Length: 428
Ligand code: UD1
Image (cartoon, rainbow, N blue to C red; front, side, top):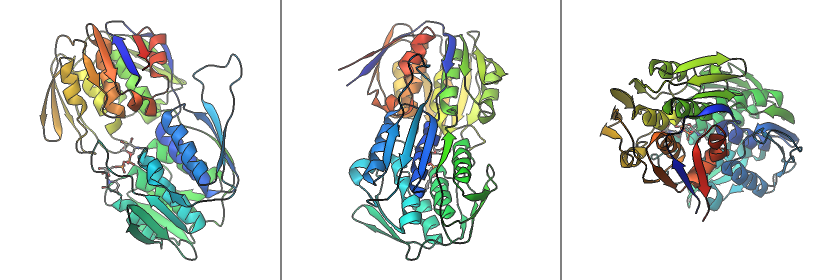
């Protein structure tokens, strides 16, 4: 199993190219199941989750191709992936595949909308909380599906197809919004989705669906209105830049007192994050086509609570906590989206962090210095918080179970090494 070794203390300087967003790329790929024409996605990130989802889509009968790179092209420029689901050969998404990536459960929406039936394994447990699927099932029932759960599988049928409905989510859910939106595009009549997720990745998918011929209004707001159409067509769509990767490298740069330009980043998707960093004393310059982050070695404490977009993202909570371990005071970080999303706390403590948990709130007492140690990645965002802490720690940190990182961060060690980090991947 691969490990990452980091010797802390180097100041990060230079440019980091921001990849396409994992959380947009995955539902965009799934949207390809809605049409028998080709969906071409550009600016695709190179991630383990993308490869796994290609495999899952092939299992349903879709052809997927990855365009080769030209010699001399920027090694971090995105891939082009073409997905052609001319015919759906199989409407079952098996446990072996769905259990490896929760987002693959979302195929339920397009399969049901297009084939009027689907059998998709429940995603099962997850390290960051129980993550139920009740909102998805209720939304699909509202759209006219018969839903049952048999032997760990959701079995959904809609004889004669789905029909429009009013769907009101009791709580904001990114995944349930994706599924309801995709299903509604091919339903008969009008669908209204209230309390829809407004995450930029949802908006990106909605824009792609419109290119495919879907009729959606209210994009970017919490009420989506969809007029169902008979069929969707192929389209070409660039994947939105990854705001979580952007925020992660911004915090890494700040942690080392560095000066880093994040090229390709979309500042407009980070409205709740950049002001928090500025409050912490980090200098942020919003530029055309990216942003520049400069730290001066002093980090001030902040008080933050995670919220659905446009609030502070739960996917940057662990990284912010890593940054605050070196603040000159006490920070308060409250997690309101997922219970049990504090697994990085114990590992950060191994590096010398002083974090006290009280229910859903962490009190982070800034310390003078961190010290390298062997640590374990527990989930995607938790593991990258350990990288941030290790970059500022004295001595060497060995990060184990890095497959978590590979799921969501493209070429992390290469991107960080290129701006001066002492970081290497050790295989085996
Ligand atoms: C997505 C993101 C993930 C991010 C999360 C919240 C992807 C691939 N993943 O995950 O990175 O951390 O949004 O921004 O885009 N809930 C229910 N019942 C349901 C569905 C959700 O109670 O049927 C709850 C969840 O337990 C959680 C909250 O709703 O407390 C929000 O979860 P949700 O937005 O659905 O997260 P995901 O879509 O799984």
